[in-house]
Amino acid sequence: MADTVSDFLVKRLSQWDLRRMNELIAAAKYWRYWDDPRLIVLVLNNRDLNLVTWEQRVLSGDPKFAASQNLPDFPYARYAGLLGFEGIPIDQPDQVGPAWDQAFACDRPVIIDAHTDPDVPPLPPHLTFKQAKAYASAILQGDPDADNILRHSIRELMA
Image (cartoon, rainbow, N blue to C red; front, top):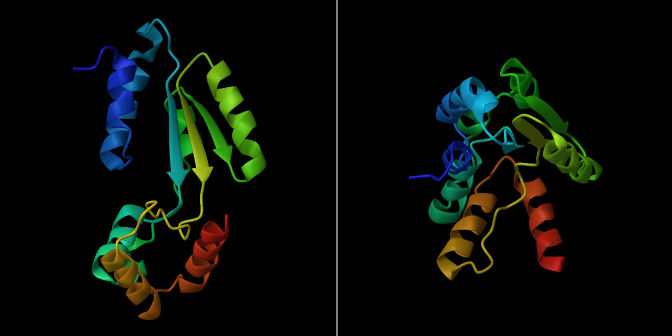
């Protein structure tokens, strides 16, 4: 069991999905009673079912199926305001530091809505040969984001 309500919520919100919206609604009900009402939720908003997309690419070699994996852009920062939280949108890399400074200074829960690129591969440090082969297969089979994915992959390898 979590030590505090905010510890519980951090654990529950670590993987965002629609069920987590209910956790935020519960936080909206109770945060005013907390000794320290700071709870910062970072949403990496890439408008994609990214975990599924990359699992299919790396484990199965299947290209992205956009019809089932592209998500509409949801305004998480505006949603924060509806809950009585602070909402902080991030569109540019130079906004990251100031957004965190603002979030830590708040007297209430915060949702940081960071718009991210879904084509940046969340590759583990060491890919197996089987995973690399499946990844290449997905790209070569006509993945709709192949050009952008390859650009990001090369950039990561060169870093």
